[in-house]
Amino acid sequence: MFWSGELTYLGLYGLCEQSSLSLTGLAEFWRLSALRLRRNASCMINYHSTRGAQLQDETCIQPLVEIPMNISLENVWQLFDIALIVELQIDRHLKSVCEIAKIHNDPETEDHIAACFLHRQTRTIKYLKNHLTSLRSMENPHLYDRLVMRPLVSQMCEYIAVKKTALVEEAGILNTHGISASELLRKILSTDTRTVSEHRGARPAEVSE
Image (cartoon, rainbow, N blue to C red; front, top):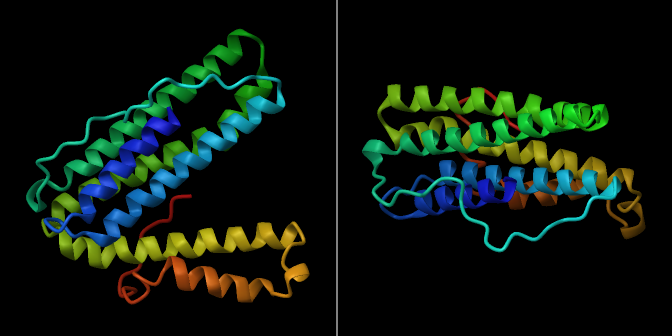
């Protein structure tokens, strides 16, 4: 489910990168959304692996939603509709897993999914609905991309970089390589945010993990 959602987001990323749309902030937002679902898939696999489960390889992973090819600036808001369908399907899947765990008297799995996935899923759905409403009301995708999506993506990249730095420092890797946490953070930020760092005029409404 997570991998299929990741493929869908990568499709949205490719659409926004096309010259006919050229919405760089929105494209990066979809790329980060794909990475989020990949991370969720890894977390789910790791959890079940520690409990003795075995991964069954999918023969063919398909996007959760078919990617339309007729997207233009006039109807680009439909991409958020697609993202909402993806997240709602994932939300239903997670809740069904919780129901199965409840039937089999497995409160640990219930608690794990609720704590690590469901509360973030609810927040993500709320944010996507807010973006959909705002984009449709503004009626200017490039302006929305410049004033909202690019600063939001920049803030998301900074958040990710800080978390990465904290994890690496906690693992004791930095000092052995002669580099401080702040130096590594600057290196990460200069790479992850170089395309959006100049667009900080508007304060993003939220940051989704």
